[in-house]
Length: 255
Image (cartoon, rainbow, N blue to C red; front, top):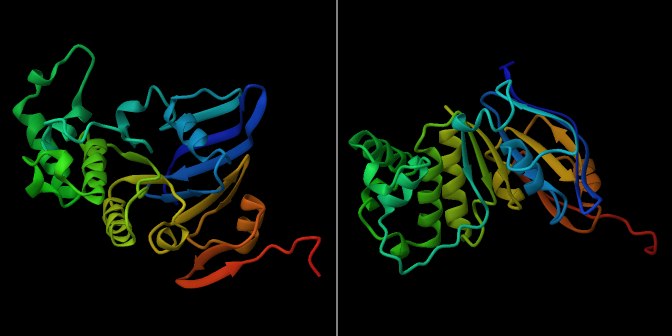
């Protein structure tokens, strides 16, 4: 088995005194492609931010590459869920990717030729190289998502976090995007938050359902009991080994 690069041990997190996450234990090994599933408000994004070091746990500990998440930040790429920007702002695709190279005290004029080459290579990895000089506002939603993934990749991270990367993208672009992520996974460990259960089931290597607690399965099979424990609601469409199923929770008031 590959070495563990993320170790989450007995982590708790509260918002306004209310537990959002409790007793979270998770180990992610190098080369894994993990999907974090679960209902809205279940704590998926919070867990992601804890592993990134953007939040600190109330209890427990998190190690990334054997260090605190902040100490390991230079080895991590991150694509947040909400990427709001002015569509009419005259910024090129290449400039958006170069923003992943920004450092405190350095302006846009400080980009080196090496930085620009790295940005172009990141675009090539997500099949967007030919759009480098296009204004980002002219791209489709799916193309913009690829550009922001390229921005997360420009520093050649060993670990990539993505929070709902297929939001507002049609099914065709969702599938294309996960095909690209699957290829990137050959060299990068990936953790993705997603609601697209049917699509991810054919691309990821392991699944963790998050609903205050975590239910981890180190294979790409989404089991019925995981869905029932994590979602605790009715009907959920899942795909296991490429075959669609519907999980129906039996309510007490039903005969």
